Length: 303
Image (tube, rainbow, N blue to C red):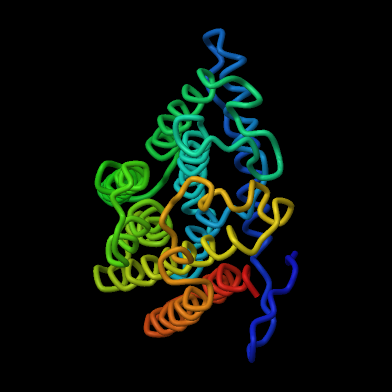
């Protein structure tokens, strides 16, 4: 099974690893939220956003990392699914009126539009907790390795990670290119990085491999955000599945607003070359082709 080919200048066309995405979707469909209390409306809102589609980039990166390290990708499926629950929670909260106030996500009304702001807040809260439960209840492996992966995940999503980056964004504290990079490293990059690094930690990879994968994941996060900022200017609502031009309407600092569109595209080219170089420098025991395919997909969204 494969997705639409991504054509890159001078490169062989590549396809997103849709078999892994399909495996993630099938697993998420079976995630069972506790129904012992009368919370049908809450779990409906959680599943509404969680199962709304998308490329599942973060969990696919986790599965692809396992594959590259010579493991069965299914070995990290609970961790991978937890990444998607956390990503979904972050999107629900990011769309709220107090944040970005968006009414479209993945081509559907946002959670707060469909279920109300109060339910959307609770749905996001619950998804974060259920993400941790997935790992603690179902992620197999050496307990010390699993605990270390949880620690990586919490660090990536907490005050010095994704949430901290979101605070810097809403507090309008970005004035320089360095501050812009730092904000996005936290807000977007940390969750992408931990998708790769955390999976390696859970599988007990050696320290050198874990750190090298962390560097690759960090640069991939930079690339993802640069392309996202470009698409916010050049893409349509239909292409993005959310309102285009949202960053400009909210007066947010982006790679395009700080550097201009042409330079932002040059930065994306530079970042993609770094991503490829970092990936090529790692000695894998398994097949790293899907890590390369996801990287090419992220870069190719603007091509």
